[in-house]
Structure formats: C-alpha cells, structure tokens
Length: 152
Image 1 (spheres, rainbow, N blue to C red):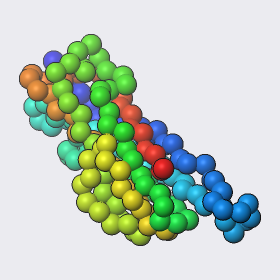
Image 2: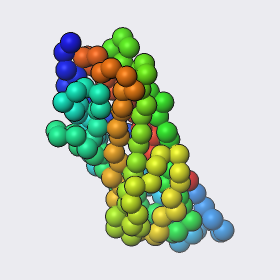
Image 3: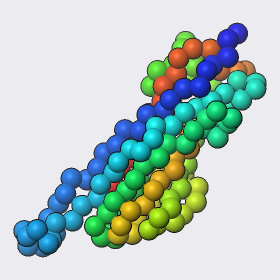
C-alpha cells in the first residue's frame, strides 16, 4: 500500500459584498472582506491513519478578515469528506476543522460550524484540518479537501 503524500486543501471563500447601512453615502458603506493568504497542506502520520495540517510537513491555512465594524461574524462550514479521493478514501473516516484568530479578534480552537463575532479591523485566521480513519489506513492516491469561510 502506498503512503498518501502531502496534499493541499483549498479554502473556498465567500465574502459578504459591501452593503449599505443607513443612508447611501461613502461614509456609511460597511463591509467584511476575506483574503486567502495560504492554502493548507495535509500530511500523513506514520500509520496513514491521520492526515492533518498539524502533522510533520503539514501546514495550516491562513485567511485575513477585514471588517469595517463589529457587526460581522466569520463562519467555517463543516466538511463531510474529501472533494477528490481515491477509491475508498472517504470511507470510514471523519474530518475535523478548527480555526483560531489573532489580531483585532483573538480566540483559540473554535470548531467548524460555530460562528465567531469579529471586531473592527484585521483578524488573521489560522485554519487546521484533520482527517482520521476510523479503521485501517487511508489508501494511497490523490486527495483534495475544501473548506468554505464566510463573513456574515
């Protein structure tokens, strides 16, 4: 059985388009902007039972959130499987995504599926993904996962 090689996971970003609150003037334009700074990389552990951005050769994804006020929250969808995987790659496994913030809004290890209110200014998100095989090991091949980040 070949060992899965490190794989990228892609951040799909959905940003709230600038919207107007109150009167339509340049000063009342409020927005929340997301910018992907780095896609993540999942790396296998020695037993091929865990693919994670926290394993050796893995890398967290990074996103910059810029908000003009404190009315916005960030939300990361909970993924249910790999977008691309070899035969059996999505069988008997679970995916977990957590995210932390630094900058204007500081927080640690929030699970995907849970929104977080952000403060005005720039907040930098670190997003980690872990895939665990519940029995056996991951088959060798190409994998790709997607994570959706929203600002609402």
